[in-house]
Image (cartoon, rainbow, N blue to C red; front, side, top):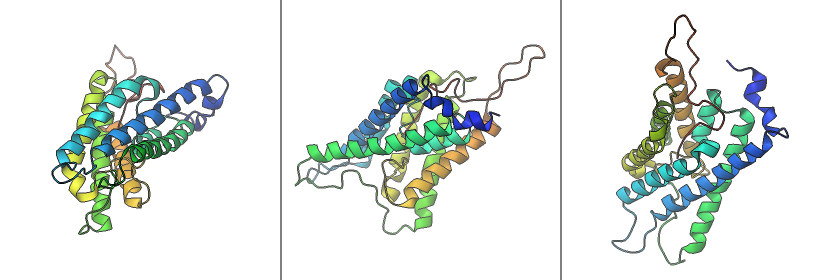
Length: 253
């Protein structure tokens, strides 16, 4: 277990660490911006017969997530989602300092993506630009449960493909993209399938659900499912980490 000092990560603010952190923050900002821009653009209704179908929305978010993670995963880990960042913090895979700034720039990136989409969309075009809304017949508890499960499956996939002893890291963007796609296919009629608190400001459902589900999945994977290092003689097994270094964790949306 890392010490509290290491978990806090103040060294990332030092003269030798801040350059890497700034680069990672820029990657998270740009990645979240494009995820929200392309994903939310797919929801716009251009008229009868030209609205965003569930399949179209799911494909847009899933493929955008996979593409962004492939592009910036080696720089920041490609979290582009506060639920991923919180799960990584709770399992000691990113420092608290890094996680704090990640969540801020992810939210700013989501705002920027929505702002650009609004600026490029004609005023008379229908739709809510991807805003997530609860189905009117759902209770708050039902909606929270749905978002919890969406966050859980997303982070279960993230930790599974980032387990260094499985050797699946190259497939991580595709697997995570499919997790996002499936979540949207299943849950758009329920809650709009947020899966990403940065995308959905406001309601506690969209923050607590994915974050709590993600943390639960991360803790379960780390302490129950994680692979261990191959034994060589009497050498002790290495403690599981889904990433080898601060810049190696890969995620989504």
